Length: 296
Ligand SMILES: [Zn+2]
Image (cartoon, rainbow, N blue to C red; front, top):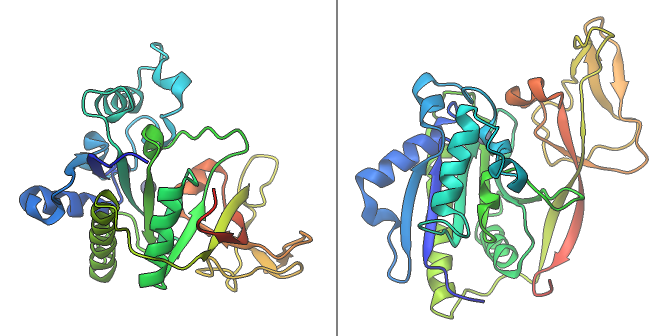
């Protein structure tokens, strides 16, 4: 594999996830923190207008604007569609400053802990994720490709990279512990890439736990589309915990339990994510697999 020459650290892809925004501002005040000898690190506020108003987005979700057909579609003129095109033209594969590795910083109201979301299981991404789990047991690896292998996310502008999803923290709120843990992971990623460029990546475990996103589940709704039940208290904040068939998922306003009626034990994540109510997602369902690191 070729060397990493440019790393792009993005905060504020969602304007109300301020851990990443304040980390990027910190790195812009003190660029030495993210520089390494073998590559250049640059920072980016993904959605400046959304950050200015403290909202997830202005017109539409920037982190769903990076499908190649949308980037090439001149009739898409929303603020975020234009912003995605600018980011792609700058840091994309054929951009003016192509990124070799993207770190996209997000936070979640769900109990995502320190999640590394990979859209691509290439050897560098997997080896890096394995390294991060080996030095910090709180790190979870979430694999989020769709069946069609096309993703609309910002980190898809280059082959290597990840989205960091930390939580639980409310929108527009800073949590000092999560801020510091996120910063530490960024430093560990940069150190890993430096060692990788120098041909001496640290050894890691040879098998890792990977949570594969397989489907999303919406809230129970009536014919008008109104939510009819809440996340069950036993499931709240239980991201990455096993959910067995027959266990409660939702609780109606009348107090009736609705159970998980699948046949397999699964591992829900993004449980009760505030930003996903509008996307008709109450949680994402994952399956746990044990993956060998040194095989593609
Ligand atoms: Zn986000």
